[in-house]
Amino acid sequence: MRRFLQKPNPVFLVLLSLAGFAAGETAGAQEAAAAGFPSIERLENRDPVFKQYLADVELARGKLFGRRNSLDAQELAGYLRIYVYAAPAEGEDFFRLSARCNVPYAGLATLNRIGYAAAWKGPVLLPSMPGIFVPETPENDLEQLIASSRDKEEGVVITLPGNGGSRRFLFFPGADFSPTERSYFLNPGFRYPLRTYRITSPFGTRPSPFTGRPQRHNGLDLAAPLGTEVYPAREGTVADLGSDAVYGNYVIIAHNDNWVSLYGHLSAINVTRRSAVTRNSVIGRVGSTGQSTGPHLHFELRKNGAAQDPGKLLFKGQ
Image (tube, rainbow, N blue to C red; front, side, top):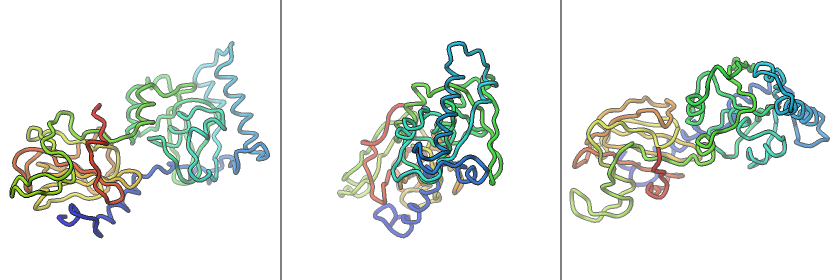
C-alpha cells in the first residue's frame, strides 16, 4: 500500500483494470440484440430497418404531441418500439445520435442506463418514442435521482426481453430530464466526499506533520468530526480496501475513464470489495487511523495512475 501511494506499481495497475467495472457500456444492449429487436446497421435511409425506425418515430411523436391527443400513458406506451443500433461509430455520442434519430437524448440515456454524457461501446437501444425509462432497481446516481423525483403512478411498466433475463422499467411517455437531472448527466464530475468539511492540507508539496521536512502530498486532507459519514466522490466500484501503516483504514474506488479515488484514515469501512457504490452510499466514517494527527479524511484522485489535484476537480455542491 505504501508504494501505491508514492508511484504507479503493479498493485495500482490492477486497480486501473478494475476501473472497467464502472465503464459506461450499454447495459443489456448486447442481450437485447440477441432477443429479437430489429437491428439497425447504419443510420442511413438506405438501411431499410433504420427507415422503418424513423417511420415509427414519426408515428409515436404524432400520437404523443398531436393537437387532439387524448391518449393516456398506457395507450401511448403501446406505440413504443425498441430497435438496436448494432455498430455505433467510434466516438459517437448521444447528442449526434439523438439528432439523427429525432428523439431526445434523455430517452436514449435512460433506456441504455448510461449515467453521464460520454461515448459508449457496443450496441445501443433506440426507443421510437420520447420519454424517460426508470429501471425497476435504480443503480447509478442519475437513475436514483430520477426515481426519487418521479411519481410512479404516472409511469407505465414495460418489460424488455434479453438472453440474460427480462428487465422491467417504468416508462414515462414524453418526459424529459429535469434541470437537475440534466446537470447530473452533462456534468458528472467529482464531488467532495464529505457533506461538511474543512480543508487542512492541500495538494502538493508541504512540510511533513511528523518530520517537518518537505513532502509530496498527493491529495486533500478534510477535517471533520470523528465518525462523520464518508461518501464516494462519484459512482463506481470498490476496487480495494484494507488497513495500511500510513493511511490506516482505506477504501479505493474505481470510476469511469481510468479514474481512481482513495479515502484514508477511516474509523470504519462500510463496503465490500467489488461492490457498486453511488454518491449516496456511505462507504465509511472519518477517523484517525494510520499516520494521522487527528480526525480527518485523506482523499486522493488519480487518472491513469497519476495523482491529480482534487481541489481543481471537485464540485462543491451536493
